[in-house]
Image 1 (cartoon, one colour):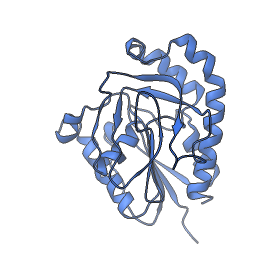
Image 2 (image 1 turned 60 degrees about the vertical axis):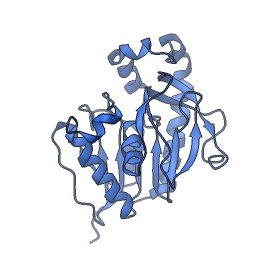
Image 3 (image 1 turned 135 degrees about the vertical axis):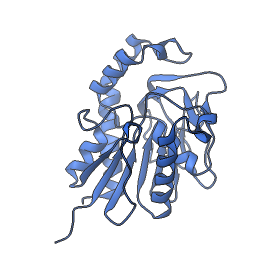
Length: 239
């Protein structure tokens, strides 16, 4: 009997199966065993082998400045970067959202840090697809954002989308490694939780007001959920 393939889901800040999201929900529907790991809470990471069908690295509430990626201030970052690099090297489909995208990008040689202009994105922002991203990123596509750090485009990667404030919003490396600065996995309920939790983001240049966010929320969450479901179907298919 063939063992069920695993989807390794790496979360931060105590998030996990208790917080439903579109990525884990879609992968469960596709028949994958969900293997939740929380390295910043003390979880170890599994050995990268043929049992892993896909790795998804989620965002986190405390972004690390570039200097912290080279110190022991966030020891779990080193483990996640090494794990992501191993997944990429072995051809395991690997996807990162926000901090997760930064972790993948850093492993590929990218620089991580705040916007040079001090901008943040908190709310729902329209992506501008590059020529390479047309067809992959829909027109007029608004996505959930909650960050003030970003990544540079790794060498050898293809840029797929940008926004006015952040030049790199989505990239693909090879055929199965994707880094996203945005949060297509985020549900409306999870974003509403962030609205209450991340009050300081409202004070940053570029963040939308609560009223602006609420006006855009329903349509953005519906369209990004549909897009992410199709993306994961195309990337890994049924287990």
